[in-house]
Length: 342
Image (cartoon, rainbow, N blue to C red; front, side):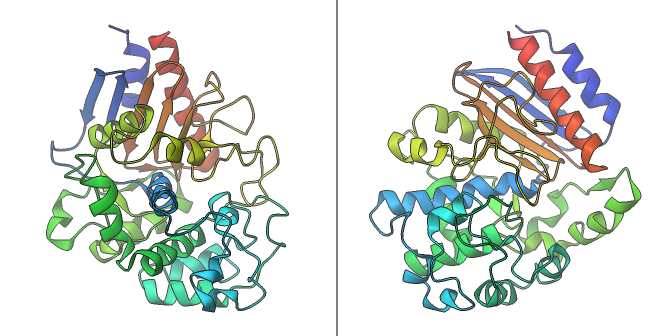
């Protein structure tokens, strides 16, 4: 078995609650819970994004849409404000040119607990850049565009579609998009290590906020279930998704190009962040194979899968910190795991 002492030292030094699961093939190398109960559920922020992206890819697999369709072909009101040329593929790759529906992250966040207002803001948004021209992280708009698309094409709310077509078929019985208020006591409270993060922890510690099925941010889960879902993706979908569907979601869409919102290069696919030797501080680690895929969640939570090493890592925490320091911590933990696993 790998020696994870360096990994656990890093996790313990940061403090707070965490759930770290490491899988290799069918083996559980580490499943470690700290500062939380066995039934704990972590709010995962942008770790959620691949779930709504895969819901869209699943609709494409079923022939209900095509990734190169304009969003407005399925949602006519979305064409308003000069958005008729934006395709589903543009949104999946953060190239739609509308990183914020309201023009600012604050404006989008204010509407976050009211999905109808968020969808209306997405309809009214005006592009900052022409569709496809630049890559710029769509922080919340990614989910509200794709979530509404799923609703219109499938005929069911995005949280229900994800539950019935991805989560339950994959055996994820604890994972939800939006934490029902009846389960609110299981939600792990966030804590802030820096002053700028306090407002965020206050907002996301409210039961009402956690209950809202924000498609880009609101998956609640534990480390083991999240890791098992990525193990399923590495295994080719196991009847939940076709291997070619997963492959399409992992195709490179941006490779070394500066992300205009993140402020540094990010390797993107059509729903995932990718590993590789570029970027400010890589959540997948500086040693990650370029084929590694996953997603960082506000530098609070992190998940990735390395198909070359057949390795999956899910690292969920409740600690919000200054961005650079938090990114460095995630990268250091990932590197320590890669060293331990060889």
